[in-house]
Length: 188
Image (cartoon, rainbow, N blue to C red; front, top):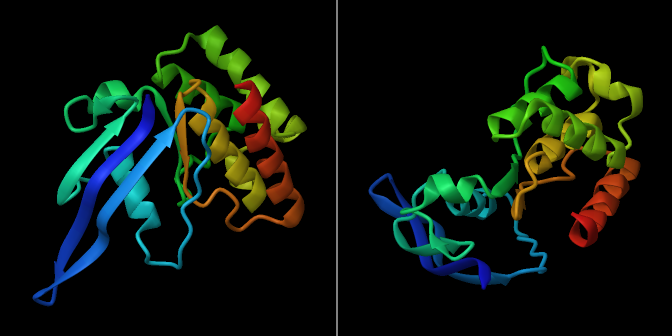
């Protein structure tokens, strides 16, 4: 079964009486166990593609299936099985990392004890140490990236979309994130 299948996807916008394409006739077929990276310059449509695959934006034309289900007809069911690490910083500064992840786990339907256990497991893999108890407002750029990744993993998704996962991080943090992603591919 394809985890993600896209047939003839196009997204266009009208700008100054001209049609501008964010994506045009895209075809993708990703199977279980495959890791796919979308590369391109700023403005190439990478984030738009991810948001469409998540059901956050609608395509102008084409068909998308995620986990074998058509996205537009099953969006809520599919979203429960998808993890997402957004490019932009949209995490609450007034919470600790642990509080935020436990809340995200519970929002995803986990019990308090299940969300707490999973939070500490993920943050352990991310080598967050005692920093996980600090307010997110005090986090460095790399720590913020780690928390965004953790919130995308908290509910044990079948598929995860990472939008610019190593943006703005130092070399060590990038290596830690890449190591974790390799680990996740084999263990989670």
